Image 1 (cartoon, rainbow, N blue to C red):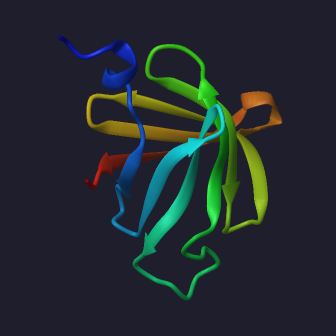
Image 2: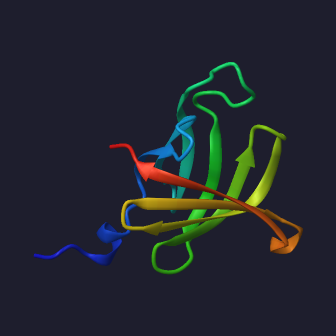
Length: 110
């Protein structure tokens, strides 16, 4: 049997930030996906291992999820999206109805 579309778009697992500064583990949380910091290069910053930074990420199309993203650097929660393309994940957090967004790229670590 071939892979199902859900399997092909599986974001669960551990992802390494493009800067190498952190790893986030994505897992099911109810009907959604959540992301928790699994490792930090600098554990003395505002982010903490075990801190949930992606909340209620629900499917929003092929390889795309939308929900909320918490930024430990400023202590604020933003509307967030995740886009998976092969083994590359891009997360974005936006304010002002999407006028200002910041994206981070991740690669699968496991």
